[in-house]
Amino acid sequence: MTPFDYVEPETLDETLALLAEHGDDATIIAGGTALTLLLKQGLIAPARLVSLRRLDQLRAIDRDGTLRIGALATHATAARSVDVQEHAAALAHTFSGVATPRIRAQATVGGNLAHADPAQDPPVTLLALDAVAIAMSAKRARRIPLGELFVDLMETSLEPDEVLLRIEVPPLPHGARTVYRKFLPRTQDDYATVSVAAVIARNATGTCTHARVALGAAGPVPIRAREAERALVGTTLDDGAIREAAALAAKATDPIDDLRGSALYKRAMAEVWTARALRDIA
Amino acid sequence: MSRHRIAFTLNGAPQEIEVPAERLLVDLLREDLGQTGTKDGCSVGVCGLCTVIVDGAPMSSCLLLAVQVNGAAVRTVEGLAPGDAPLAPLQQAFIDEGGFQCGICTSGQLMAATALLEARPDATDAEIREGMLGNLCRCTGYYGITRAIGRARR
Image 1 (tube, chains in turn green, brown):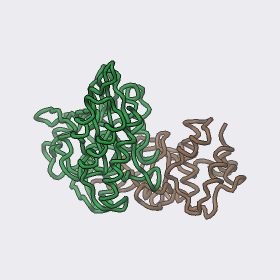
Image 2 (tube, chains in turn purple, orange):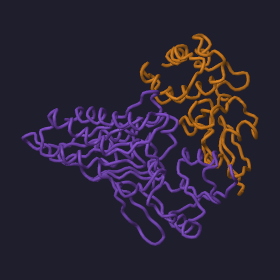
Image 3 (cartoon, rainbow over the protein chains, first blue to last red):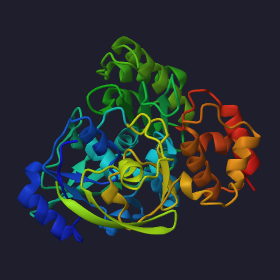
Image 4 (tube, rainbow over the protein chains, first blue to last red):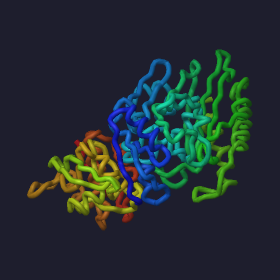
């Protein structure tokens, strides 16, 4: 590990001032599970780490129609949160299935998003839930829809002087059902070969009025399968509609060959697992 | 580069030590404090050998900077049966049930299981398997390990 300076500001203002001054050669550390690996492997060598660990106000989770998850809430806390469970069962399920109990106890919700690993679980579900990231710098606060947060492989639209404060999940349509499923052919703590999150709402006659389908590990960023969503709305979510949406979702993917499968295989599995996810909530 | 004076408790005993910012907790324990019960295995947070308990939760000490435990309560395998104290019931259960073969993963297994049983004293067999996910035993002694944890639960 290349040596670095470490600072632990006491307040958000102090944190933002530090980032305004040193943002370009500073890196924020939250839980540190992903960052420590990047440091150990020499993939990054920042001059300075700015730790958020004293900013306890960023650990809170609350809900008043909109669900707000502080950036420093751990995966374990989010998985156990009644607010998260009541807002979207699939989101609590997503957090409870990330990696291992050790990682979930240390890794934070905000750190996970800022890391922007496309094989991670929470970004996929949050994308399907129309979540918005709230970021702040010394100059301004701004709202970043999740679809605009992820720019490329492990790259976000966060500026070097910005801190991710929290994630906001808007109220779901009445009666909406949510699901997150991941394909793990090797071990339960592995990264997914492909993963799918979906949100479906229907009206009193059973017609689909709202559909979101998002895929993980299927491209350089988590992917919204918009054509699949459009194909679902207006149907009764019969088997034909699900098959068509699953095929369209697979077409939206842009996977690569790696240890978890060839691009061809992942695309085929995207179709299979999208269909399974949709059948779960149809 | 920067150096930090950190204070934390290790198995209940107050510690104060100066560390460079990049010191890992596993190295602080093993190299600086001579507590070699905690093992460094894969060094990437996957294998579970370096599992310690930080403020009640199991964590990989290879993924924690020492500065991150400033003010925390850290527990390692050395704290399960300190000095001449008898073995903890969980340790005895590992012996009785053959919960280890080569032993390299054992301290991590014990700490993960300790955290698990403290959080869920009446954990079901399924919860034990779920809670021990990510503590690998390359001798594949999993049946003995889960039996031992089952035996030690309330």
